[in-house]
Length: 141
Figure 1 (cartoon, rainbow, N blue to C red):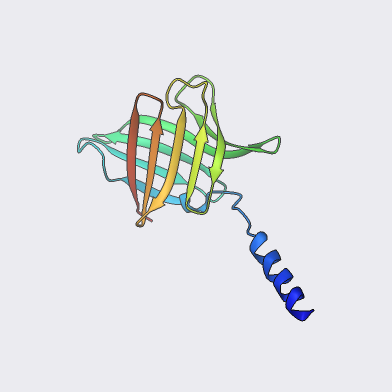
Figure 2 (cartoon, rainbow, N blue to C red):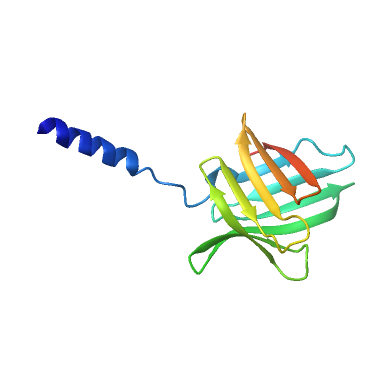
């Protein structure tokens, strides 16, 4: 009988694996290392999962977007503001401790935004069916 109780307790422990609620691996200040040498791109992610991405060329900001991981009516979204007239929402379709995938099939480009940790680097991809841009960031703080 003790053996059965032990097996039952072990099976409950394995079935209680919790999934992350937020992509904590994003937090920090990141610098793109696979960038055109005439530009420098940064992403900054705060503890509340708000952030900003921007690109500098000759100390002038040539691109800027506001980023947020937000919850709307119990669903999680990746929100991008500043690129289009209205904020663009991407549904978080997959979230692990080391990756996040977000999709919006209605958006022309990108339709998918992905981030993941690999060998201490933050990697990202923005893509649609025909085109993709890869990003590699290293943490600078």
